[in-house]
Amino acid sequence: MIDNDILFNIKEKAIADKVPIIMDDTLKKIREILEPLKPIKILEIGTAVGYSAICFSCFLAENGKIDTIERDEQKVKEANNNINLMGLKNTINVLYGDATEILPTLNDKYDVVFIDAAKGRYPFFLEQALRLINDNGIILADNILYKGYVLSDYNKHKQRTAVRNLREYISKVSNNPNLETEILDIGDGLAISKYKRGI
Image (cartoon, rainbow, N blue to C red):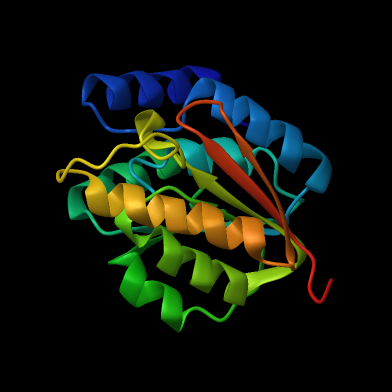
């Protein structure tokens, strides 16, 4: 069982430290998807302090597992501390390193892949998610609309690569015949792609 007081403290500390965490309305939508699905294995790309992985653990099947990847050493330490506080160290496995290096080494199959990491890498993360997802699995990508830039005519240099790659991600999930995708304007944008092999 999740201790809601500890979870609230983790959330409040992340907000105070300006660590980006999943927004409440995005989490509510994901809950609607995952609760009936009862996934056995979830892959998360972008752990931060472990808040979303802890939340997702509530929706797992019995004895379900979460693998989550984080490249920031300090965040890995904080995430592991938070996971231990929640008594979830046997449920959530934090993989320390760059997702672009770790993902190609994974060979497990996952019922859900949640992407919430470097925006400029979303097309690569999608490529790996498609390799690792189970039939009838779901790929979720958070912050897909990126402050509204992605669907606007935004072209400023500072965020240009991130915006271009998020647009590429949306194009790929929208045009892949094996994916049924919807883009929701909640939080900072959520892409939900249901995978059906060989449609």
